[in-house]
Length: 85
Image 1 (cartoon, rainbow, N blue to C red):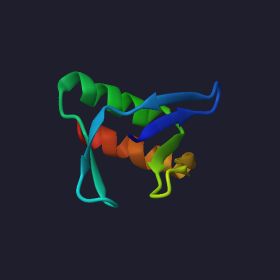
Image 2 (image 1 turned 120 degrees about the vertical axis):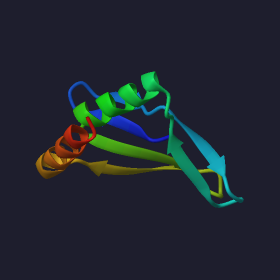
Image 3 (image 1 turned 180 degrees about the vertical axis):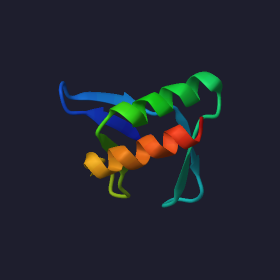
Image 4 (image 1 turned 90 degrees about the vertical axis):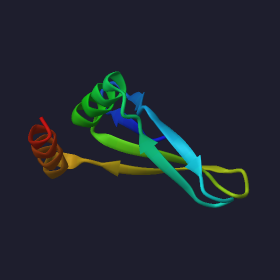
């Protein structure tokens, strides 16, 4: 499940969602639509600086794809969240 991560202190915030297996190598991930889960996810996306996507590889190893929002990403996400209100 995707996670958000803060720098100081290093804190992982799992997003509330569901995984759907398409076949042996493909999955879809959707975020929950319940009011509490939506607010949790929006808060986590707004305050955390990193997106972490843990993955289980076909050979059983675990990998993680990580993106930093950065200053420009913070601005874009803040504008998107504001427009959804």
